[in-house]
Image (cartoon, rainbow, N blue to C red; front, top):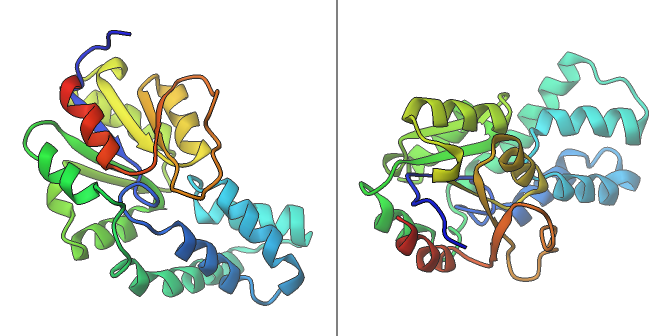
Length: 220
């Protein structure tokens, strides 16, 4: 199938640029250590909804699993607890294989963006301290939805959805691609559950970003 040449690439961050999925799952487990009998269920919910804001997850966990009310003060404390657990680890975990090579290949050739479920200011700090901020024309995070962020990026750059590729690893990433009409490639790490095979609009499934390098060059 012949595609329009790419003019814009958008990356999720966790599980696409940084190999942070397992670490963040354990951070969720630790954050909810006060309800040990629910920890496995909570971690699985987190993994099944990787592209969702942590605060949306907190509300769901309290309502549907703990059957308790979550007030704003508790929500803020949970957010601080979780962020404190992951903050320093995010600055040292490895990048996804091929990520740095791909970014070096593409820098200056095509606009690159990050759209993450991580809170925006936190995402900017992580990218800056990891020496990655300079690769991207913009870095977006929650509380804005991924679809809204993608629409703004398309509008800012005057680029059509057909000229845009979004690389994600969560069902919410795929959903955002479908809502905005952009092309979508799923990253499924070796050993992880494949949630994308047979889904509409999934152009390719890759295990690392070396495979993206092979795909992208002929499409620029």
